[in-house]
Image (cartoon, rainbow, N blue to C red; front, side, top):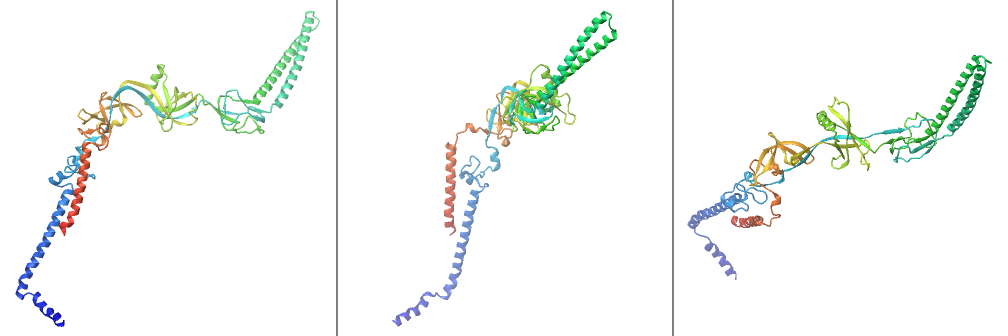
Length: 463
């Protein structure tokens, strides 16, 4: 066994080792083959990388552009441009919204910020002194003119009234006696029984008593008026504010804050200003006997609160602002306007008949002035300069440059230029169920499959 194991060991080097001359000839060939294989692998990897970059990036050649999905539309999936690059998007039809110019009435409206101002704001003050017995109103209550609001203690004035009535009765009796004596004296004078001086003195006494009686009657009227003033009534109709004095307090005519404040709400007015440039137009309309309509809107200028009419205007222009004040009157039946409320006032000055009207968003401003994009029959647009007129909210009138019935672009005009092609989204089928959508989806899936295929075989080529 030991001999068998030793025998191969002695023969293995002889069988496996080549001759010296053979080793010298075979080593250079093996090195060349190894270098050739390495260079081939590097060249293959570079070729594959170049093909991938050639197909993936926009500068791909005709083969890559033809095989890429969506090449006809100039765009790749994922937002990459095809052969045309960014210029291809400019040649594509742009989706826009359009509107047709209509013909109708366009109101000429002056809009201004106004303040709701009541026609009357009255502070209820006591007109005599006394203790406030009762208060008959509630805070925030709507009262009418003549309603009793409070009561001052009337007893001192009732006593004074009775005293004045007693004085009047006494003086009336003295007057009657003086008149009887004058009548007797006049009879005696006719009989030449007394001197005329005594008759004249009695006549003067009668006139004196007549004056006293009138003075007493005036005192009675004064105390009766005090009793009326003791019952404090509403001088105007309106809403009562917060109570300033509680019952039991001693009040006087010099009370600073009064008992309460009444504000007239129906009707109510809005005072607003307008530029002096609009003054002549307003005067011309009012002089013709027309009543200009005015509408009050809320702070956001979206919801109308009340509709009224122009009442009057101020008699002079404010030199510091170049504006004039106007007052519009509103019935305010539902109390939609509140005193000192800020409102947006729209004054209807005139109405233009048969005006060409388009949405406000259709009119653009540029170096040439105002212009619109007019849609042609072949679904291309052209730039049309226009001259605009009055504006009413989301509508604007066109004085010249556009005819009724023409279509204009209202949305998406920032992507347009002269002669650009457009598409109207409402005219296109919804979704991607059409042939173009199906081919695009197919191309996208093919592209993803091609990329996946290249991703699988690239490692095999590099091995």
